[in-house]
Image 1 (cartoon, helix red, strand yellow):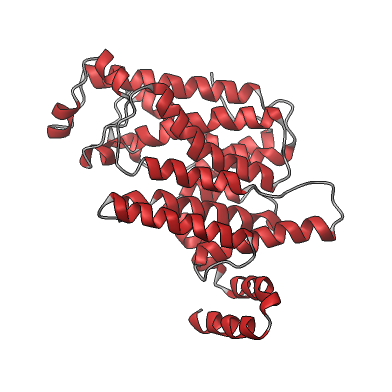
Image 2: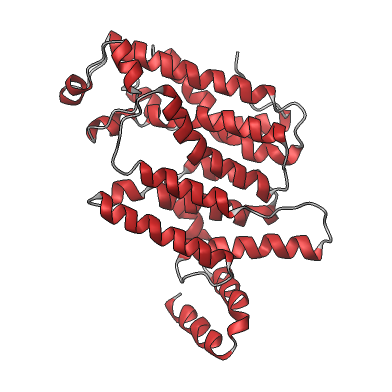
Length: 325
């Protein structure tokens, strides 16, 4: 790969106007299976959902998920917030270069550049009226929200928690909808509510990990309402009635968003289904959490759902993604 990148640098020096084409050529020669393995291990459920996109669109979806994984991992991979902010700024600058057609020689940035070029090329060569252009604003909104969350502040209200989910999970969904040419108010509403459900469920699912990091993901207004002491929980992470009640309230909010998202999906084009399928694992988790009496520390709800691939396939064929009963 290094040799290929050096060749590109040499070619660019001779033909600066061909930089974007050289970058795309390098990316196409990279080992696809290696890139996919990284996403498979870090975002297994997202990887499965990607397989339901048309073959032509899958590299774009993989690039978007790789970008999302890259940003989500920064908080846990840096020793202090200053380094985290530097990493976030690197990605702001990199995105500007990606959209200018001069991406840095970084695998995820190259993947995004290739995806954007492919989207534009398909639009031009197919003479399609379908606009699949992805907006820079959604990429940068993910960065901004992740950066603000570097210092591990506890959400004060459920509304703050939902806003964080909207700006991170939602921005990714908006990018995916744009990439498949689905641009409608109903699709945006569905994605907005689905993002809030997904984000809340993801944080609850990682509750044991967050406890180990002395990080409380349940909003302060809810822990206060149920007399849940986070200090006591950090010292001794065990299930209590207060924790169950607080978890129930947060999980109920996620379920309500899932129901609302479902209500907007009836008239959406089938092209939107692979994007919104990302909510199916959320529905499954919330049901397992309910069976465990809203104990977010239960090992059973941390386990991977072995029949998820079959469930995704069945729901996709059925055209109705969620069973919110």
